[in-house]
Length: 337
Image 1 (tube, rainbow, N blue to C red):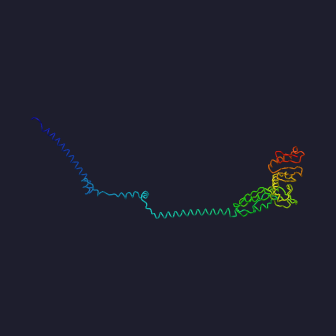
Image 2 (spheres, rainbow, N blue to C red):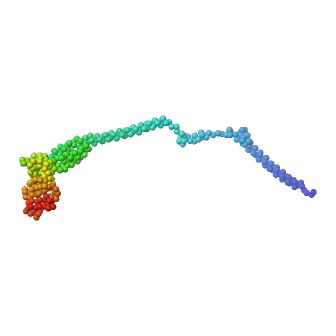
Image 3 (cartoon, rainbow, N blue to C red):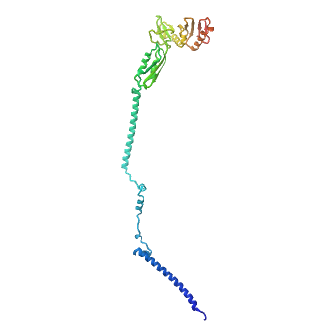
């Protein structure tokens, strides 16, 4: 009964009231501050927006719309936009362009072929038909020849090629015809560009003179061909073969073998021959130094060896001694008489 309830209850009650009242005052202040902020926002936004913000609802119809397609096209309107845009192809135009391109290619090729043909034709005309490479008679040079094979005879053959292009001149035909001339042992023909040619021959003197019964002399070469009859030509140093008839003598094997032997003798020995006899092809005989020495050759086989043996014997006094005949029919066993 002696408790003081009033102070305790008042204290706790006043503390509880202050607590509850303080929290209430704080909540009321926050609500008043929120209403002031919302009122200021509503005043700026307008009546419609105020209700939306107040209610917490957003109307999508009132939002600002943006055209994304237009924005993308604007941003890519440069070179990148041109690349990105699809290109519309005009196939008829492309076909025309292709036809024009093909026509140009064909025209260019035709021009090239025509130019090549003209160039080839021009070159052919220049080499074969123009006067640039035409052989002139005045530009033909003759080398060789002698009194039995005249330069005029050689020129008559070479001049057949005159007025031809050097590219058409046949040097082989010239040499073949020259080799058919009696007395010509070798012949060559060489072109001298642009308009000349040189013809060279090696002409021999007659291998022998054939003397028939009527004392007439006929010059023949090593092949038994009759040389030109030249008036006033010297026959000194040319061996003479006695035959009954010239034509029959040229068909005789003995005469032909004798001609081969005489043509192969060195000129020094040919000059010493005074007489030749050929009764048979195996008994060919020559006389040297007006009958001082008589050489029996036999036939024309192994002639190089026979000639060497004869030279050794007649030019060595210890070998020939006072003998006058040398028989080399068997060259390995010569007989000296």
